[in-house]
Image 1 (cartoon, helix red, strand yellow):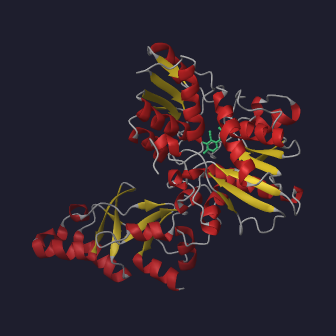
Image 2 (image 1 turned 180 degrees about the horizontal axis):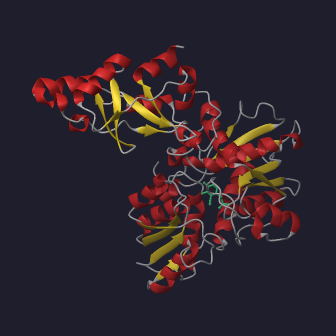
Image 3 (image 1 turned 180 degrees about the vertical axis):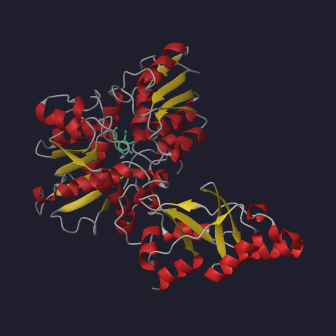
Length: 453
Ligand SMILES: Cc1ncc(COP(=O)(O)O)c(C=O)c1O
């Protein structure tokens, strides 16, 4: 048995019970794992549906160009379908998106234009505006417009909803999904409510997005809008695909909780999913006391973890944002264990032999070199020895003559793993600037002490 092309493999994604993360919840919690779609996200479904509906309506003609403002996943589905169907693709996206997502679009031969995140949607620089301008300017082009194109919702009404109904044998009581364009929750939610009006549909929103307040008050409040980190969910406008009447409740999740839960999905359930999957599960945990023993909850895991390697799956990234309460040693904890040691530096004009003598007296084997208060390099005992063996007259030369590039700087939150990777034969220490701007040094010796202590 084979498929005619890759697009035929979209859908029929597995449903997997969550066990450890949700152990304190009543009921059965099932994750719909959309990462097994060929583009590794749920968006393959609606991308193909939007294209096929546009073809049928005569909006997209052979040899045409598909244009879209996309955060990556929809682009991936569109780009994949465009390869099979022979269209050109141009995408606009924002500088908030992971580099991995943008590179993946380019892998399919799509052109990608990166636009600023923190501008109004109406601003001519926004990724919405740029894609609309391209559509006006490029002949035989069609803008998919995933936000307002209702083929998006229809894809989930026709596929995702029925799959959930069948996989749970009609027992589903709750659907939980991150809301971006709204297509997933509105389409699948509408289908499920038609099957059983008692099914509750919970949308997961982010802080910085307008959805929750709009649902609860009918007010579109611009004060709700501010930049946030979570990818794929929440918006600063109201897409036509968000069917507010289908969604019973919106739950907001913080960037930190979404990021940490994304990581926990891999660590505790072995499921390698993206940021909005973490947000959805974190949101469900917040709503946990609304569940009963006979609840059957389906949570949508929209996309794959590989697109977030530089983000939620990177401990330094988490730490830099203060998301990780430290289990691992960092520059800060290494320094705390060692105590305060004044940083000795050599002035660039100081002679080689003077520098060597003070290093000997102070029992240090490497020293940063400064010029007018700026660190310009370093010397080690062996640099001095080698230089003097080569040319004994260098003894009275300024130490800057023989210094090598400075020790790299790290910040207080940098992990011991990262620091260790910076320390090797030619670089035996790193420099750290503390919160008061004071510079200190961490040597290999300090790291060994911290690990063994
Ligand atoms: C990673 C991710 N999660 C969630 C969503 C939200 O899905 P929908 O647009 O169907 O509301 C998207 C889509 O924008 C997404 O890319």
